Image 1 (cartoon, rainbow, N blue to C red):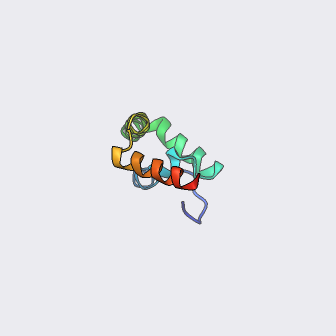
Image 2 (cartoon, one colour; image 1 turned 180 degrees about the vertical axis):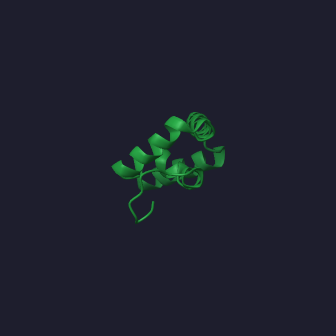
Image 3 (cartoon, helix red, strand yellow; image 1 turned 90 degrees about the vertical axis):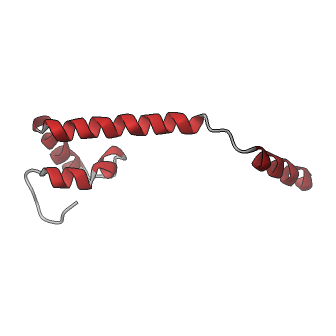
Length: 83
């Protein structure tokens, strides 16, 4: 996040690094500071919970997306040509 040592994060930093936090891309120290902020800041905690749920819903929906028929046909053609 930042190059200087900090002892706590503010809401702007939480907002800026939400996706990195959710993706586990922060250092241990950054995660600790992020989690400490969420412990006392209800609005940020609620935002993170919303973002987690949204990410889970998107993952679930993506699993149920079927490729278009044309793509299936093209893949079949390529596989047949390889044989």
